[in-house]
Length: 244
Ligand code: GEK
Image (cartoon, rainbow, N blue to C red):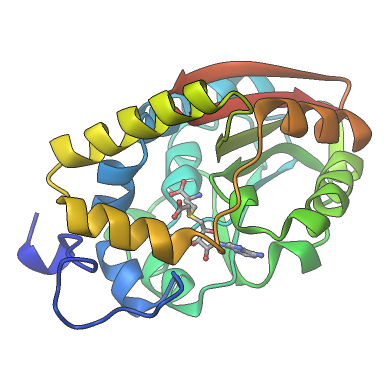
């Protein structure tokens, strides 16, 4: 990894914005940042192919909502075997969408990716067999989350799947403390220092709003999903699959 792509945003003396934003500086170091900050991220991405093999239907659309540089879209494009599918990858950060489209891996994909710069709340979901919200819903204002999930539910075909990965909180303070401590230890082990960890935490405070697993499951049911299963957890990071 070149030094230009190493996440030093909260180590540099030059001050980043007080509130975390997905700007050019973040887009440039994003793969390094997310790998070193989100426990289990690589596992979730690697397992997408298995889910795609089971759930992506011929002649359907797969949505990667809050795609960043399109790690999910790219993993899916390499593993979808169903014919006549397309992938729609959406992000409201112009820097993310711009850099996503410059990646060399985009040549010769079996399933094409359409990149859209937009708010995921404005995107109509239709004819979907798989929808991915990989660590994105946590950045959507809580009051807007139910409506977004309803629109995903109504756009999913029978037999389709929503994959929802999130950082979660815990009602029990001891459990919450334990999981936060484990997450911070994970970040330290990945080379972040105490100052970087605490500065990033403050910057994310009003931007990334985690909820409990129960809140997520209840809201998914309210949005119309018939069942939700937890398939992955590492500390306070989980991934769920919800069926329409
Ligand atoms: C991955 N899924 O690599 N509309 C569109 N995009 C949004 C919105 C919104 N309302 N809110 C946030 N975003 C990716 C990782 S990162 C997670 C997702 C993280 C976008 C935001 O611009 C950013 O690119 C992404 O959601 C969240 O699997 O950084 O922890």
